[in-house]
Length: 160
Figure 1 (cartoon, rainbow, N blue to C red):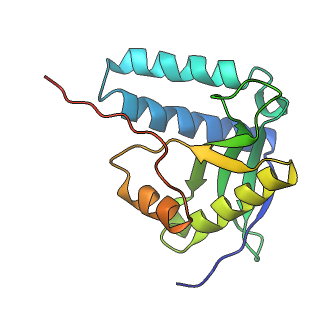
Figure 2 (cartoon, helix red, strand yellow):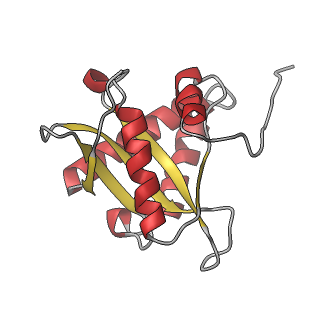
């Protein structure tokens, strides 16, 4: 597979709204396997409001579009402070979301966006980039492992 390169740029307002709508729908879909759908949608919306109180202008958060060398928008990402570390003391950034648009999937763009997100965090003095991934998302897990990510904690569940 060819090694892709991307450039990150700030989302325009319409891109931000589309990205948040997509992220919330996907997160609610995953959560609705564990709780009623309406509760899942509400929980996801509250999370967005909590972490992005000023939308795309929330301090410390980067909501970015990824463009390939031809200028095509291939995906997006949301990078911000690690929610598990105290404000102002965090040496770790958090990848809240990464998305490769359908026509560009399975072509190396996920890894390219991830690498660009890592560079963005490093430029801000962060020494690590952490994230959560759904356990059933084998393609994403493989991409993260290939990129050098390791499991740092794990939650498990069994429906009774």
